[in-house]
Image (tube, rainbow, N blue to C red; front, top):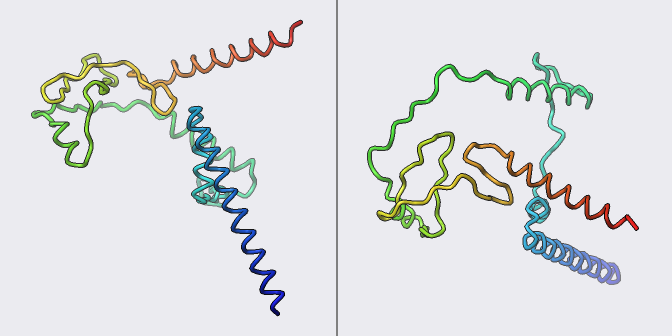
Length: 185
């Protein structure tokens, strides 16, 4: 009986060590991904470290509420769903949002929750409007910008990602050209 207990302890000890080594390896990989600005990899590693797994085999039902079992039919139903959701007509009336009657006092409100706004690093980006918003911080107006980079993606005032896609395509073409030139004698 004592031999079994010792063997069991050894197995548990080895398992803990292997788990610790695995987690430390993932943490190092996450640090490397973060330093190289590979946000997608960082996100995947973080999901692994958190151990949260989502059920990807969610039941899919047709419009009548019947369960769809075949993978092909499920794909067709998702395709149909997104076509309906994403191809809706423009609304007949647009929202009429009036201009605020009083200042927000950004710095004061931010400090209430422990934030400090740096005026040198802060800019305003108007969305879908020709008039730049007049937002100031302690009496100093914030500069306007038409685009900025957030988590590796370029966000523009038009709301599109065309500039980001063009840059990514140019980067891929450049990489392919470099690889192709290495193959040539």
